[in-house]
Length: 105
Ligand SMILES: [Zn+2]
Image (cartoon, rainbow, N blue to C red):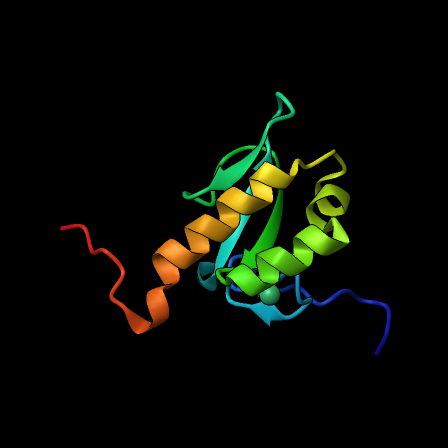
């Protein structure tokens, strides 16, 4: 029973939000990375190089993460408050209470 590690498909594995601690499918989360240069930023592609952390696309979660300094902990670097603020702006912008997200054709 215990012993052998179960192989899971990494791409389908849910990610944990560093704000609320809940698991969500990756596409519902925003990815924040620490680049090799030490810069912390939002990664819209989900593929950028660097250490990554995930947050729900909800300003509440970002605010919670800010309070707990969750990103600093997850990324093992100092994360400035402005990073969180820009993420909150990003969430409110794209969330829009049921408003349609811009669809590119
Ligand atoms: Zn969350």
